Image (cartoon, rainbow, N blue to C red):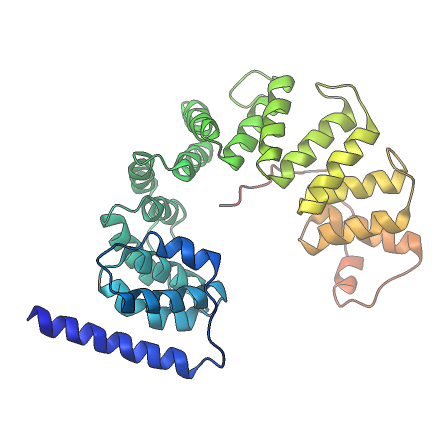
Length: 338
């Protein structure tokens, strides 16, 4: 019986390989991502399995999720963990997405002890993607991943508690998990812990500690941390006010993609603070922020176009020109990228 099942599985894999080869005009090159994932493949897998997995991961890397699903399916059925994880991810990313099927494969991977799958299930239940929203189940899955020292799960559990601020203990629990994640170098946990100290959320305001944490998060590559450091220098919070230094930090954050930093840098160019006044540079940075959907960036871009006397031919300009700056600023804390 076992021999028959094995032959069927190999036959399915062979068909998948044939489908893959038919649809490709050139042989794939093994990427660093594939090498990393294959290094986690169990020793009992045959070279044939590894070759199919290699091809599937290349398709994932190239965002050909339909082909990846065809190749990964037989491997996932065979119980190969890395195939199950990537198959779940492929179902999430494929258009149209199939969240329920993704959940199914994350469950199978989680049962094999994958902390990544356990953390993903926590997020799935926290947001109700493919399953009914259930905070208790989300917490359970995050805790399972945390037992395996998943820094992402620590951060996500902290964020879940942050979203439940109607409960008296929420700040305490959120800070606790952000601290644990920050202690093991989680970038976003460090950034949001800094925000707590900067804003006095659940703790006493401590600008010096907030700046220290923002610097740590910036070193870990968080673009918005560069913006926050620049903001401290721009208004003189915890440090001596210095527009030139602020401009340098805004420039770093803006280059890395922080929309807030792009708008802030545009403002400095617009008013000539810390940098030479250049309306064209200001317009450029407003445009980058607007392209990311930043509301202030969109409104300031319209004003910049009007001031420059130019309006690039862009279909979005008509919509932008119909907007008017609001009288009051109701800026909210930017959300976390999960």
